[in-house]
Image (cartoon, rainbow, N blue to C red; front, side, top):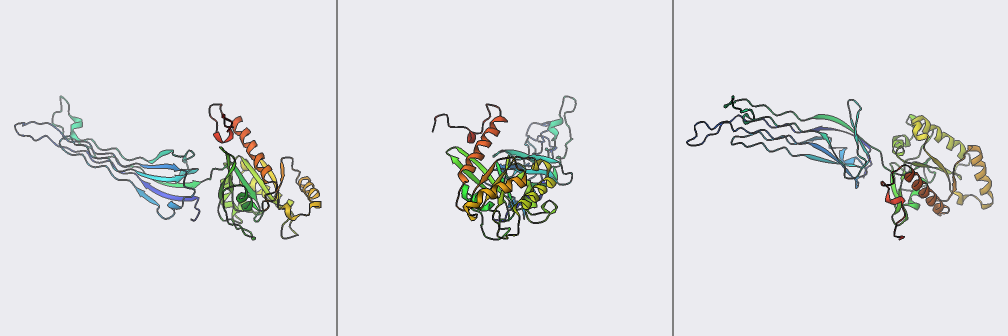
Length: 357
């Protein structure tokens, strides 16, 4: 399935039905009075957050959605039937904005959440609505109100706890396949990853976190170079970034430190808030470095980067050091989550089972 994270759609809610002007006609009742019913409401356009979806591809080709209009009112006190609603299923993390003004209308962040994106028009009033002691034979009726019509821009930002950051071929896809249930395409050439991949990392029963792997970045990404710039927005909702650094690039003339600094600079240009997120250094492909040279290489990279945070030395291919990385990430997320939540609002993934299971 092709990954689509942006789409523009047109939605048109149903118009309300017209009210009816009618009088009761019954044998032996010469003055039956008004009995024209109101028109039915037009159908709404609803959006629901569906946890089983991870792309907006359903809106790539079908871009206009129209709800049914309300039925007109009838005589004999009969109200019109309301128009059929239309429910659009969207991935969790979808941002719904007005395409003309750019105003964000809603963000679907909770699975099962339902919102109204276009309201159907109310039905018109029938003449029975206007009867009174002084107006016993009203002939007034009103047409139904028009339903809302608007053009919406949909933007998907995947929801993940951890985002993988790095140059093409740094080993991000290999890492996410080694520690999670994700199975991205892996090959020995750059830009193998063409769209974000999500993986659930199981630390223990009832303990997990979600990792997002986006296409690799290159220098100039914030201005549109390469592929990664298209998906940087998917890292904005993560709580922790893992900067994957290839310590043994195929091209011996490539300096990992220069690459790392270039990526950090691109993050800052794209979004200062993204640049300010906690970012850990993960040195990958250490299995390709002789054992007696590893310690000196790691110290040199950290020193030249002037990096003060956690450093993890791993080999995603052999899984060396991956378990330590997983445990470190989980412990950080658990502490960070509990420090920002009220005691009654706790994510069960980051709490030990009270039964000790």
